[in-house]
Each structure stands twice: as C-alpha cells, then as structure tokens.
Image 1: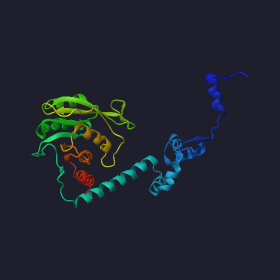
Image 2: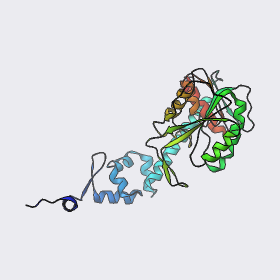
Image 3: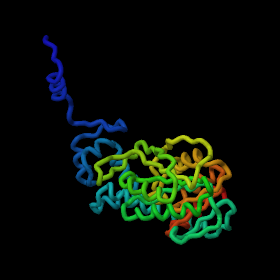
Image 4: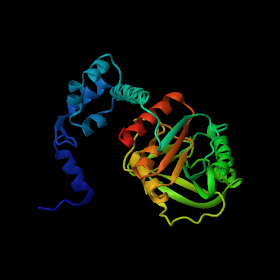
Length: 300
C-alpha cells in the first residue's frame, strides 16, 4: 500500500474526520448544529461558541444575562453592561463608606484641577498616569511646569504614557525638566489596538524626568502588570503594575504625589510600600472612590 504524504494525506485525513462535533477549551463536545443555533440566538460568531463549550450554561446560570439575551441583545454587549453596572455599584459603596471616615495622617486626596492646585509640601517623586488621547496633550506641559514646584530638588517625575504622541510629550517635558530615562511597563496578555497607527501594543513607556540632578537609588527600568484592571476607573492601571513601579522607584517613607490619581491605585501601591501619598483628581465622584480605596488599603 502506497503511503500518503504531505498535503494530500492531510487533506484526506480532514475529509475523513468527523464534522458533527467540535472540542471546546473546556473539553466539552459541542455539536456543530448547536453551535450554529447558539451563535444565532446570542448574537456572536460560531467561533466564539466553539471556543467555549460552557457558553449556554453561563447564560442559564446568570438570570440578568438570560433576561438580556432573551430580548435580542447581543451576548457580549449584555455581559459588558452587566459588568459595568456591578462596577458602578461597587464604586458607589466604597465612596459612601469613605464619607464617614476621619482624615488620615498618611495620605490626602484633593478634588482639584492641577492648573490651580497649590500645596506647600514638596515631594520625593511624582508617579502618575496622565490621560492619553490627543485632546489632553496640553496637560503634559502643565504637568512639567507644575512639577518644578511640586518636586524636591533632584526629585523624579515618573509618568506613564501612550506611544502615539511621544515626540510632542518629550518636547513639552524637556522645556521644564531634565530628561533622565525611558523605562518599559509590560502588559502581557493585554494587547491594546492603536487604530490610528495600526499597532497592537503590549507595553507602555514610562517617562522619567528629573527636577535638577537625580542622585537617588539605582533602579530597574522594566515594570510589569499582571492583569488588566478597569474595575475602579476606565483608564485605571492594575495594583500589581503600580506597585511594581512604586516599589522599584521609591524608598519606604518617601512622599509621593499623583496629580492624575483617578481612583487611587498609585496611592494604594504607595501605602503598601510604606510611603506617604497625596493625590489630585478633578472628578469629585472618582476622588471619593479613591478615598475609600485608600482607607481600605490602610485598614481603616
């Protein structure tokens, strides 16, 4: 008998294989006709159904999801809306708890605009994550100018950035501060599509500028986030990622400022590392969420 080789063998093998079942990641055998029906009913592709043999079970065991898809709403959209509502409830609860708490001697959250916020204290480091969209580019110039006031001599501005407008950002920061280094913030398994550049990126630059001459500790220049975390803010970073930055860049007992503190993740990382922290957030509701998270991080 002549042996079948290469492409012809593989083609005949595929032709002789069963086509009535598909094996999902969970090990569940899912009939093709069932996959087609579920895809049609729930507004997703057959590929999505085949990838998860437990798909129908998820709908059945989640009343809110079952009700949403029964009205014809696509399953993925329904899941996002349910998750968004859960996040909203969680943020409201933690913000309300914070209102009954006394002031802390380890941190402060200021509901203010960095354009006119003033504070007498000078900081060892500014660790922050400004907004990335183009309409916020002017904030980098304001951040650089104000950092000269906020930082101690030799203190560092450590700012996470998107990649699309780096040339302009470097120019604005260099007008007031001294360029020191560019580090990498890795986000493995969390690719972000940059449509305007046709790039899927899995890292972000950390721009490090000094107020004068930096003479602090030696530090590594690669940081890593273990997961994507948007529970507290739609632009938020993970606690693991911010702790990676704070723990490598700051010494316990130092005073850190985040002028774009959002829901306070930098502050949570700072407290865990034994630092003092001030945060500035322009949105009142988000600043209250930050307070609640910092009270929890402090164990109060």
